[in-house]
Image 1 (cartoon, rainbow, N blue to C red):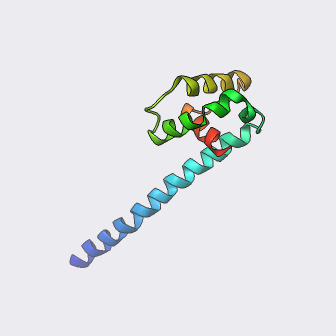
Image 2: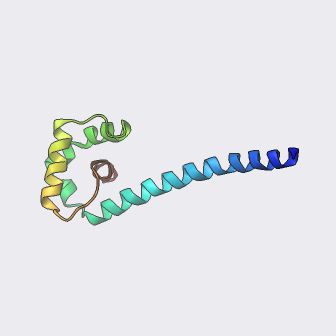
Image 3: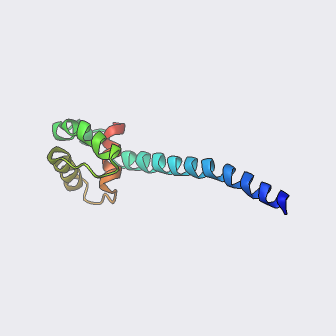
Length: 98
């Protein structure tokens, strides 16, 4: 019985980092996908470029800190690409990637 607990404890320790890596990779893959849907042209826009620092704050706060500049840039991106289904957080990450 004791060896069963040891095996379970080892399995739990090994699963935690794997899950964290999975989550990180999924986030990077989503951001890359959103960035690939948009060419670099929208990111050359002055409105979007001005919102880069605000996008960093938005991403860093997991979507809690919103600014007028970032909201305007997100609105502009959605108007230019009506078929875009990315969340605000994914678009902010794409702004940072560019």
